[in-house]
Structures are given as C-alpha cells and as structure tokens.
Length: 318
Image (cartoon, rainbow, N blue to C red; front, side, top):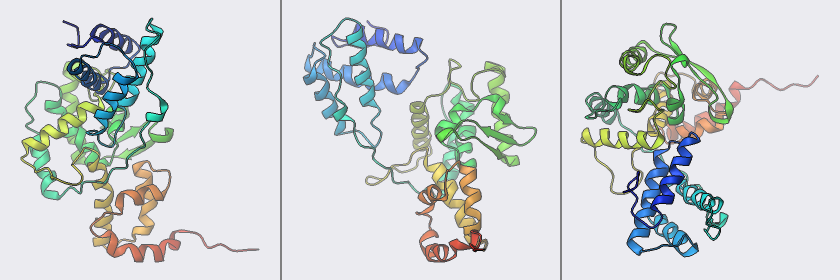
C-alpha cells in the first residue's frame, strides 16, 4: 500500500512526486485530492501508460463536473513534467491548449438569518482539529473585515495587534498591504482563538490559523469546513444557480456597507474610496464589482452615476 493510498499503475510515482513537492514546501491538499481523482480514473480504466489518451481522457471527464476553478490541470501537467525528469521520457505533458478560461463566479447573497445560523453552527463544529475553536474567528475576518480567503490564511500572529485594535494585511493581491482597524467584538473573537492556539502551537508559529500539524490551513480545507458548517446549520443548498462559498462573506461585507450607508442617508459616492481601500482594491471599479448585486444598489445606481463627479476636484485652466 502506498503512502497516499494510490491504487493505479502510477501509485509509486505519485507518492514520490508528492513527497518531492512537500520537500519543496508545497503542502496543498487540493493537489492530493485531484491526483487521487486521476489515480481512480486510471484504476477504473486499467491505464498503465502516462500518454495523451490517459491524461486528456481524464481531463475531458473532469471538465464535465468541475466548477470555475481549473487549477487541477496544472497538477497533472506538473506530474507529467516530473515523470519526464525522472526517466519516463515518453510521459505526456498536458498541452497548454487545455488551459481552461477562468469562469467568473456569481455571488450567493447571504441573508442575515443565514449568517446568524452559520456562526451558531461554527461555534459548535464537530471536529478534533483546530477548526473547533478557529472556525468562528476565521470566518469572522471574512464577514466583518471583508478579507479574502488567502489573506486570512496568510495572517501571522505578528500581524494581529489585539491590544492596539488593528491587523496588518501584508503583501496581499497585487502586492498591496493595508492596516485595518478592528471592532471590540472582532478583537474578542480573535483573542479567544489566539489563547487556545498559542497554548498548543506557541505564539511564534508560522501563521495565526493552523492545521492539526501546525502548518498553514489550505484553501481546500477552508472550503471543506465552510460546507460542513453550512450543512450542520441546516441551511439549504440551491438546486440551481450559485452555491454558497466562503468568498461570499467578503462580497456580503461590501454590499452590506453600501446598504447601511444608503439607509442612513450617507453619501455613498464619497464613501466608496474608503471601502475600496479597506478591501484592498486598486480602484473603485473593483469595488463596484462586489456591490452591483446589493439589494439597494439598482435603485440607487442612477443617483450614484449622476453624483460621481462630486468626489472629483473641479478641473480648471489657468
């Protein structure tokens, strides 16, 4: 039996390849999960050669069930390159022509009731991993601070300043960093999480949120835990249309602020640059992407477009 429980003719090579990736600092659970899918496909069909028929056959099958993310193509392509370097000169490297176009996601609009039920379930999630006490804090940062999933995963203990009431998002998307103030409620949630994690993994661990082995949590694990909590909360999954996902907390953060400003009679146009900065956007255009589905947005869109010039200085000639 192989270390990762592969069963196909490529089992030993897959194990050796993953050991190599781990030694290089790549611990991704997503890579292992998709290579298991490839391994199962080869076992079912009895394939013993890593050739074009085998690889492209699996890719074609996988495309019929994959969502908007297509990173799994890079995993099987990289494995082919690794096989060539390690003696299998006939191993097929997936053609660049198979690079699938990025499929933009449509947000799932979370309701206040769904959010309440989600966090109630997150506080009682049944697991022996650190997610038992980390889940509420992790998703709170996405919901209450609008952070990206990757930004939360990469936070280090030294980036979170609970006594001063702020956190630093370092080298985020497009290598932009920003400092975000925290509310007392968020500080309390993070402090409770830190106390438990520090007792088990120390204050000098690599990241604020960790797996059972003390490693950074993976993107795949975040999705798994989100779905587990969603189901534990008894929340429905639409049969058609967009399914709920962790990133919808960030989307909700954007349009919830817009809704609140509109309800309070605040000039939304004047506030958009602040929201864009808080969320780490390079321009207001990126912020509009998140808020265009706001329940109040369409009604107010005409007003926003009419008053956009109010935040720009008057142009004059001398």
